[in-house]
Image (cartoon, rainbow, N blue to C red):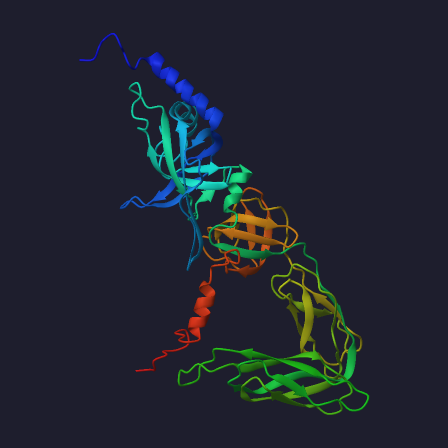
Length: 464
């Protein structure tokens, strides 16, 4: 039996030891942030964490046990790129955790354990601007001095990101994951404006070109050659378009065929319909017939390309005044836009016939409103696809939005609405390649593999 005159563990003695430890931690420690993990979804069989988030950060002083530097294997170079594998051991006060952090996190949803530090929670280490994940909590070292434990020893490894949501509202913490994870790049519509164009009418121009034979086997767009106009006139210019995926009566998928001819310039001064020939493109057999007329729409000039278009706008002709006593027809044309959402050209399908004065050409409006500024980590939702994602970064100058944790597939032209900011802008370009990760080469590997065997076209080993 122990000597009853020596208590070796009174409350006052334990309190003195705890106070001395707290003072030492404040003198020789560093301020870190303790970030509890909130478990959103777990696997019911093996208890694997499927989805979690970190929305709160609490400052607390900690002593760095590994004073010589980070432990672990350091930074490694492997076939998967550069992999840092630093470890860190920290000591924090048990009393400080139980009196300060535990009361703040015990009522948070999906915490699971609030009475002590737990494995899976994060530590933000400001000296290296890094996030560490707690892998083991040692609560019995030193071993029961005066019959009590006074500290927690946290053995941590560098945090490996797996699409967790980190939104603590502490910028120096949250910015650690700006470039982490799979990131899609969306180019959105900026300020929108309507394009404008002008035209004139001409006589003896090519009013339309009709395809009489599509040909077959084209691997690229063939060049369209229209015979020259007589002296004093201007030769017409045509541009071919192709169509893919046509199936013949035997069930075979043909290569590209010529779909139609767009007229970039009707020319003028023709007295007979010019011949049309096709050159190049890897195929053969295409043929077409041209038709000329008087009082037709001539070359259309884009005076302002506008901005903010996600798809080619409609082109309409109004105030059409025709000659009397002649055959007449209304003009038809199509607009073409760049990847920047600007109208660059208007090509004619039918230049009309019998105009006495030039009609008025009108280009459709972008019909897209752009407003607001997206904020980091907010959830955005596609108006048509209902796809959701979280904002990584938003550049209001280039209108580039980087997102991660994407729940589906966004659609070009749909509007993205921010849940917090209320920002609303339409998608112009979707890039699913992770351009932020220089080691992500999935698409390159697949493209190279398709050059060897491509199962998308047909059975590479022959039909049975």
